[in-house]
Amino acid sequence: MFNKILLAYDGSRGADAALTKAADLCKLTGGTLTVLTVYRHHSMLEASLSMVRGSTDRGGSLDDALREASREAAEYAKTRCIDLGVPEVHAFIKGGQTSRTIVSFADDQASDLIVLGSRGLGASESYMLGSVSHKVTSLTDVPVLVV
Image (cartoon, rainbow, N blue to C red):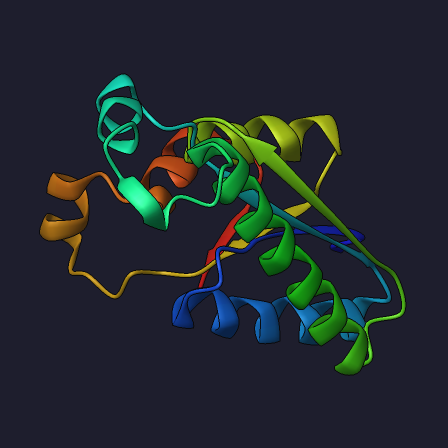
């Protein structure tokens, strides 16, 4: 069945629902759970805007802030899964284009299943907006569970 489950987690409500489902599946199958949080590097426009932020800047780059927020989300998800009774949980963060990074990581880890949250949009809206869940399902051969 599913021995290596990858949970794509971003801290949203949909991701929390996906976390619960992934934890349930791991307990049911005895598989391992890998949590992946992806942050996207900021653009040159964002870099330009960050140069004029003023006194609210804490001295770090926007990439540093995104990386730290991703690390916190991944650690939260790992701790939550352990609390839910998942025996083996690993957490990773990666920078890059979200859907492609998830698919590439799933391939590298030989994942049997990718679990991720839905934004709750209808099919046509999802297609027009190019949501991560829609892109992941179209880019991978690995089964995907959208919660």
